[in-house]
Amino acid sequence: MLVSMKAMLNAAYQAHYAVGQFNINNLEWVTTVLMTAKEMRSPAILGVSGGTIKHMLGFKTIYQVVKEGMEYLEIDVPIALHLDHGQSYESCIAAIQAGFSSVRFDGSHLPFDENLAITKRVTDYAHKRGVSVEAELGTIAGSEDGIVNSQVIYADPQQCLTLVKETSVDCLAAALGSTHGLYKGKAKLGFDEMAHIAQLIKIPLVLHGGTGISNEDMCHAIKLGTAKINVNTENMYAWCLEVKRLFAQQGDKAISDPRKVINQGLKPVAEKIKERMTLFGSANRY
Ligand code: 13P
Image 1: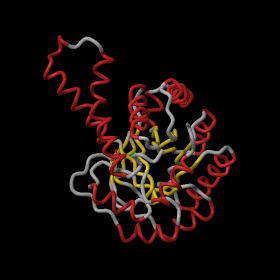
Image 2: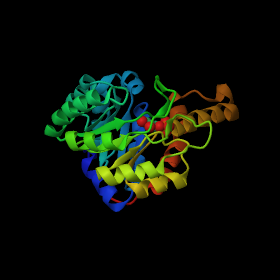
Image 3: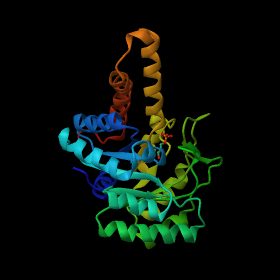
Image 4: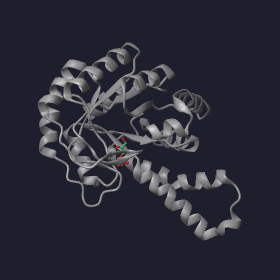
């Protein structure tokens, strides 16, 4: 079932678990996330970043791959197809028109009033079509698909409340110390601020930059009201390490089928996604 994030995140929020957003990179990655979700009886969110939009030939192609793939694979757990880091009103609308069931408008780099105004326009358009919207405040440091931020800026609680009230977004990514990519040191999440914001806004919080956050911190964030956790870099690294291992073990000449290489790399990725679904508490919910 391709669905918006609304019902799946509200269910998670109420029962104190989180749904993983696993970014996709190619056809085989889509298959891996879908089949793992089905096996684990877990909802899942397929995240699509700017780099993947180009790599997988645009919103319409991605939507068709996911929609037809779900039918072919007989996927019977809730799946959301979500635009990650929508950089403009236009890109969010294009994703919705192509069939995406969820979008994130990332206006965190804009002045607050502008972020709020565009988030509201996106939400008005999306909600009329049954599509969910994630908004963002504060700055998540690190780098992701060419978007680079050098500093962490915590989301302001009052701005979070105003944004949620005036736009009716479905969930909020409030930056509170997490970083995209691999951490240089241990992530320091602002749990006091998270508790404060969660208590003010009373809608699901989103934790970006899942790679490098300890299991303990993830569980703590879920207890405080985080119902969506994004994970990407650890899966990309797992794929690359496995393919390097394969070539080192078998030698270049023994390998002649690219499909087998791609799928071998995805085996540890599937294991990592299973671990995440178990940790987040989303397994065996459907
Ligand atoms: P990581 O790449 O750090 O896991 O973050 C993923 C993410 O937040 C996608 O939006």
